[in-house]
Amino acid sequence: MSNYVIEIGSQPSLPVAGSDKRFPVGRIYCVGRNYADHAREMGHDPDREPPFFFMKPANSIVQNHATLGYPVGTKDVHHEIEMVVAIGKGGKNIAVEKALSHVWGYGVGLDMTRRDIQGEAKKQGRPWEMGKAFDESAPVTALRPASEIGHPAKGAITLKVNGQVKQTGDLAMQIWSVPEQISHLSHLITLQAGDLIFSGTPAGVGPVKAGDKLEGHVDGVGDLIISYRS
Ligand code: MN
Image (cartoon, rainbow, N blue to C red; front, side, top):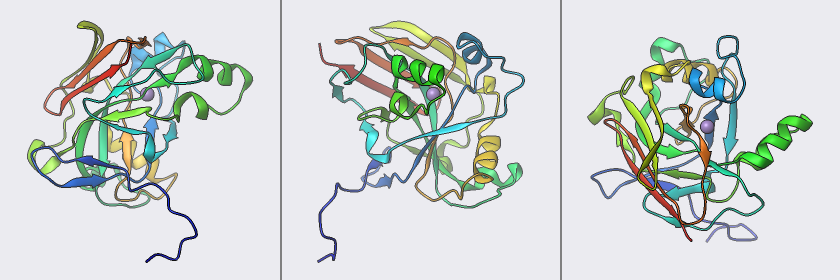
């Protein structure tokens, strides 16, 4: 029996591929504009910006193969396909050379974005929060342990909508590598086991409509399939 005055939802988690075990999700950090071609398509100069981070709540996680309703409060939801890094060991002020020892594994995720709300926030100089951190905004595949697949630093990252390729890139095109992301972030907050890092999206982001089927892929990591109800 707990001493809490109310009950809240259960611990958000993701399956571990090929296992009946699950990875408990703590906090979700996302890297902004981490592929040069995407930074350019959003109207920014990729060469002069250090990495920056925003968050989604852990309970915005959606399991692979889910069918979702179109998000509320928006008429312009965008897909952003990303590799997701799962932190297995916390720490602060982590050196780039030591960073990969903090990674438990990897998945494929979608940083779903209410682009109209985000755009208005940018224009007004307000937080992005309501553009990024909403219900069901973080679909992620089962995670694969680094002990099995290693630490992917190159390989295709793609997204199809209704069978048509919309986003293509390569992990090697990341402006800030996974070890650099971990190091930067750990100088801003204390990373904790269970944290996820969405590592940025390549060019080709665009709108999703009711009835669309999204198929994301990262070489050697997995395939994410999400549908929106028509
Ligand atoms: Mn993103």
